[in-house]
Image 1 (cartoon, rainbow, N blue to C red):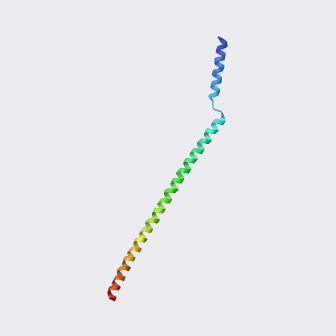
Image 2 (image 1 turned 180 degrees about the vertical axis):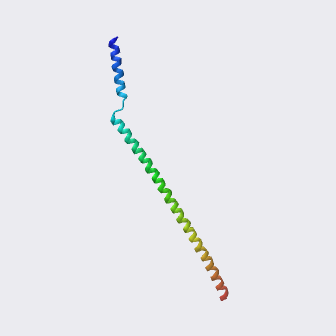
Image 3 (image 1 turned 45 degrees about the horizontal axis):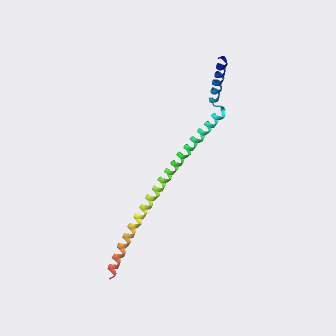
Length: 90
């Protein structure tokens, strides 16, 4: 019976040693975590940059719409003036 207990204890010790992480596993998990958080940071930065670019593009489009509106008003006024000139020359 002592022989079986010694064998069982040796098996328990071997199993406990097998489940303890060694330094390479710890380093591997740490590196993976750092890379993962780095990727999350880069994605967040990229999304922020895209938001800024979108705001700038919207501002430029608003300015273009305003300019086109003014040009349209000027053309309407020019058309009115030309129509008046044509009426006077008849």
